[in-house]
Image 1 (spheres, rainbow over the protein chains, first blue to last red):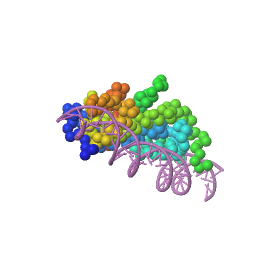
Image 2: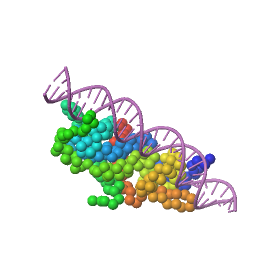
Image 3: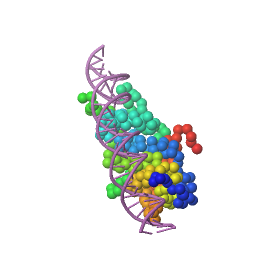
Image 4: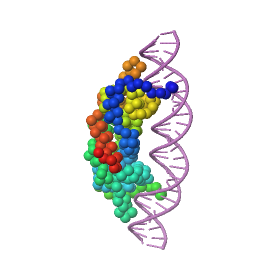
Length: 124
Length: 124
DNA sequence: CGTACATCCGTACTATTACACGGATATCAT
DNA sequence: ATGATATCCGTGTAATAGTACGGATGTACG
């Protein structure tokens, strides 16, 4: 059996401590889903863009990010499906906003902090 | 030209505001890389597990998560490459810990908060 | 000194995902 | 009504990433 894990835990005490702080696979799956959604250049940039304004239509968002309408529409669709943004159709223009349930300050703060972690040299 | 974006912005004022808060594609790429790394059930669970203890070896971590040694080893390798965890070899056992530069309280707090956002029904 | 064990690493397979394209829908202007 | 515009949606394709397998490496123990 080359692939069998330990028969005996090396450090039982710490193992138990770890077991306590680990989240369930189920929770981890949901968390991964959410994070994976934000873990996309276009989608995260959309969230940042929307955090600065009350609302904006698809075409303008595409202009702000300098991506195609389609890319913006596609990304917004996913964010919408996940409930992170809401949309409102006025005439033939569709306006998007961050969802009310969106943890604005938390995410804004955390993401920007993570950004500085991810940036090795150019800190401001 | 069916795929041409707006020639004229719909809301110029808000567009400018959005342009200001959007991050660069480059930054977004780095951020996405980091988030994407955490956006995996095994990897996020490993981080949670390690946040509860000073260190733990691969086999014990695999036991704690109930995954194969290989899966744990692979996930730890990626976290290590990204600099999120550090390892120390003692004899034939390899112990992993969260990196010193790891934003413990921030991430722990944010992730758990995000978890409750991701959980639709069972809040505790 | 040789056997057993913990872990790593390269390779191959499979699944997931992003993106672009074309057409569809609905709305406004003429 | 007819044409043009803003956006959505389904489909296909190409890139990407996760998982499993086999072997390699180094260490402890008898």
